[in-house]
Length: 88
Image 1 (cartoon, helix red, strand yellow):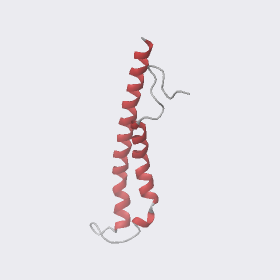
Image 2: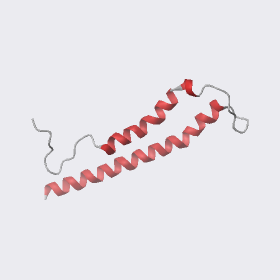
Image 3: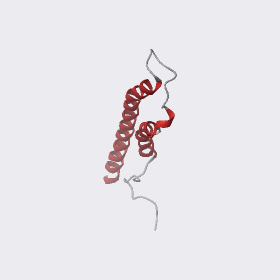
Image 4: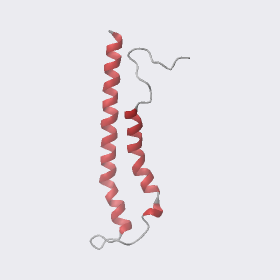
C-alpha cells in the first residue's frame, strides 16, 4: 500500500497541525502540573506566587490559542489551494 496522497490532497497530519496541537496542550499541561506552582514565594506586589502565576497564564494561554488558530487557518488555506490545483 502506497503512503503517497493523490494530487491535490494533503496528509491529515501536517507539521502545522501538530504544532497547533502542541500550542493548545502547553497551557493545559502547565496548569495541571500543580506541584510546580504551589508555593507562596516569590510575591509580586504582595500577591503570592500561586495566584499571580495562574493569572499570568490567562493571557499567555490566549496567545497560544491565537497561534494555534493562525497555524490551522494557514493549513486550511494550503489544503484549499491544493484541492483547487488538483481539480484543474
